[in-house]
Every structure is written in C-alpha cells, then in structure tokens.
Amino acid sequence: MPPTDLPSRLDPIADRAPAAAPPGAGRLLILTLGFLSAMAPLSVDIYLPALPMLQTTFAADQAKTLLTLSAFLIGFGVGQLFLGPLSDRFGRKRPLIAGLVLYLIASIACALAPSISAVIFWRFMQALGGCAVPVLVQAMVRDLFDRNEGARILSLNLLVMGAAPIAAPLIGGQIVLWFDWRWIFWVLACYGVLALLGAIWLPETLSPARRHRVHPLMMMLGYVALFRDRRYLGYAFCAAFFYCGLFAFLAGSPFVYIEHFGIKPQYYGFLFGLNIVGMMLASFINARIVLRRGPDRLLRIGCAIGAAGALVLAITGTAGWGGIAGVAVPVFAFLSMMGLVGGNAISGALAIFPERAGAAAAFAGALQFGMGALTGALVGWLADGTPGPMSLVMFAAALAALLCNLLLVRAPSRP
Image (spheres, rainbow, N blue to C red):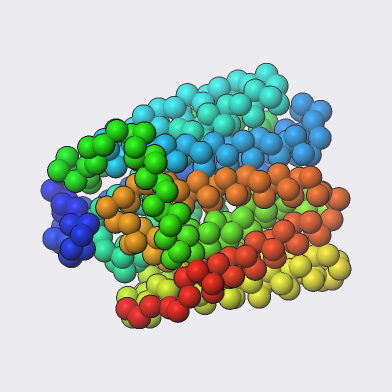
C-alpha cells in the first residue's frame, strides 16, 4: 500500500489516538524508520576499529584522531538545533532528503580526504547532513502516536536499528583487516544512497495545517520555552548524560580493548556487539511492558541500574581488577539500560511540547551529541593507556543522569 495511505498525524492538543494503519504499511514504516535511524550508530561504530589505523596513517596523536569522532558528534548536535524548527515550519520530508544528500557527498569526500584535518572537516559536514535523521524520525513518531504508544514505537525502532551497531564494528574490523580505513566511508556512501531512497518513500507526517507559519528565526527563539520547563529539561538532560556514558565508551573502547588488552581489530566488534544485544533485549522488554508500567517508572529503573553498573566499572577499571571481564561486564550492565532510558526519556520530553515536536526533539538530540562530543574529547585528553579515564567518565555521566531523573523528573507517572 502506498505511504500516503498511512494515518494522519495526531491532534497535538487533544492527543487522541490515530486511525489504525494497515498492518503491512505500519510494519514497513517502522522498518524504514529503523533503517534510517541506524545512520548515527552505523556512521560512528563502523569507524571505531579504524581509529588506530587512522592515527598511524596521518601520524597523529590520539587526541587529534579522536577529533574526527568529536567533530561528527558536534555536527550531529548543532545541526539538529536548526533542522528541528525548520521541520516544524516546512514539514519533515524535504529537510530529511536534503540532509541525506549532504551526508552522501560528505561520505565520498571523507573517503578521498588527503589529511587528518580534511577528515575532521568532512566528518563534521557528514554529521550536519546525517543529523536530519534522528530529529525527524522522532518528530514523525510524535506526529503519528501519543506518548505511551510513541515510547513503544521508539523501543521497536531501537530493535530494528539494533542490527547496525552490532554489525558495524564487525564490518569495520573486516574492512581494516583486508583493505584500509577509506573503504569504510565508501560503505557509508552506499548506505547513504539506500537511506535516501527510503526517505523518498516515506510520507509527509506533518500536514500544512499543522505547520508553524512564523519566521524560522522566531522559531529558533522558541527554544527559550523549552528551558523554562523543569520536566522537559529533566528528560532531555537525563538522556544526554546517559548518552555521554555511551560516547565515552565509543571514544575509549577501541584503544582500551585493542591496545591495552591486545584484542585484534577484527574481533573488537564481537565485544562491542554484546552490548548492543543487551540494548536490544532491554528495548524489547520496554516495548512489551511500557503501556502497563509507565515510561517514567521504567526510565527511573534504567537510570538506577545503569548507575550501579557504572559504579562497578569505575572501581574495576581504575583498580585493574578482573582484566578485560572487569571492564566488559559492568559496561554491558550500563549500556544495556540504553534500551530503557533512550525511548522513555525522549517520548517524555516530546509529550510536553507536542506542538513543537521538531524543536523539542532537536534540542534533546543536540544535547546528546554536543555533550557526547565533549565527553569523547575528554576521554582523549585524559587517556593514559589504561581503562581508568573511560571508566570514571562513564560513572560520572551515569550519576548525573540519575540525579537529573531524581531531581527534575521526580515521581514516576502511572500509565
């Protein structure tokens, strides 16, 4: 069935239930959104096994090499601040297509880059294009579903996109085993082509009648309203700090696992993939019980378990206890809780400002990737060849996420 037969968006004020989509179209829609949402983890995770090779190719130090990762995260965060309000004004589909075109061009430029500085620049541009995906996918979900159902859909979305961060480091490890790091960006360019075709198929979920008719500059000033809402900030910063722990792992784990523990690059993906299995399992559980237990309650449970796992990691990682298992096991406990924290926090934030879903999703995404970029750079600056800096930064991030939940979101809501 063509995508135009999907249900019209919810009334953002009444928040009433949408008309049921045909089963086939609904499943295909979720699969397409999941495929698109894989852009961020794929663009980051496939690249991780190549970081030591990239450092060697350009004779760069670890801190500058990690700037290629931080530049991507900064671009991914900053770009969302502009695309969110623009999507509330012009709709979701056109900005999505434009962003994917830029992503494709930048991926090719990265593959041809002659220097580490060129890689840093084009990674930033690649992120500016790719950042259209998460903010617009989340806004599309908010256009079509209420809060609890939106949390369920986002959890299913995490399940669909979960294959990307499992497969990406495995693919990246095989690429650097047989070829060099440039081929990673040719693979990303091919993915960009497929993502562009998927975006062209998607329907426009924001009807002209629901779009803001004010100037985009005035819509940017509308971010002030987000800062005035305590619960919105609680949800947004809770998710952002939890993502900081994830990005600390992304920045530190290639050097910890490959250089400190001596894991071969082609096997790094297996250790990394175990964490994604945990995320997918938690996402599956969340999708099954969120309508009964309530997203706020599950969000708090995820924050608490994540903080406990990060505390163990801080102890074992800095003391050197347990070898690689002393790092991998508590990391698994922490990262698995992304399946509870991610979808529930974002759905809670968007539910507060349904009429500005694009801007609300953009600001939350900008926090995640902007703070994540700083976290990745911090791990690089503190690097001493041991798991200690990564472990301590992950614990600080998990503790901050829990405090945001306790102090700003406060009492869990009932379904």
